[in-house]
Length: 291
Image 1 (cartoon, rainbow, N blue to C red):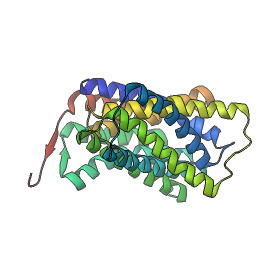
Image 2 (cartoon, helix red, strand yellow):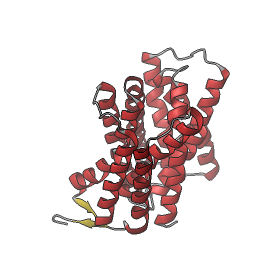
Image 3 (cartoon, rainbow, N blue to C red):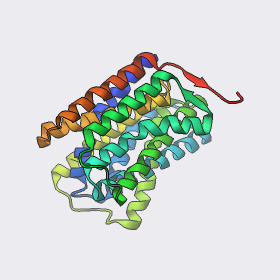
């Protein structure tokens, strides 16, 4: 697999994830936050571990440690996101989640002294401007929920960088991709048993939403993302993540008849332009400092 193929896979994954805002919103009407995360990741892990056994993948102590680290990151991220979605507007949440595109290169500079090339920096500016045009209407009020979403964005940026670091250390992408689901499930099950009623009475359609989130958005999405990240850079991953807000808007239009203003469609064009620039030209990362 080359970098362009990996980027295309990530775009496909983000297309699926664009639907999760609707699905999670509907799911939270019947399930508590930790229960929703626990069910979603437990079902995904149950299917995924069967695949690992069929492939006879080797699992070592350092593999479990790496998976636990990533699983904890996802648990924290989803907890922050879902609590944020409960207490802030969708507009604010959508913009703040897309700021992952900014935090990834900033964290790369901070921890690894890596400066993204000019095309990546241009793509970051285009994507951030585009998401702002798509989501900002009367200003962005940083209420408590918005702050939670901002921290979730930082958390996702850390997970993206950590995933690349783990894969560069020689871990198997499929094994890590599945085991991280198990640890996310484990952390959320613990929180569910402490803070929520473990067995809610939910209608049948709510369980259908859980299955959709588990199979498509979690098992397929997270495993393919981990595999694809082995062949692309954290900056590319962060940039492609901004498409999630574009696809979420499309799903909102189809299912909720939400229509973007003119500036929103200009924002869509800017985001797509930024991602295209990153995929086509942003292949290298310049290093600075005493390396």
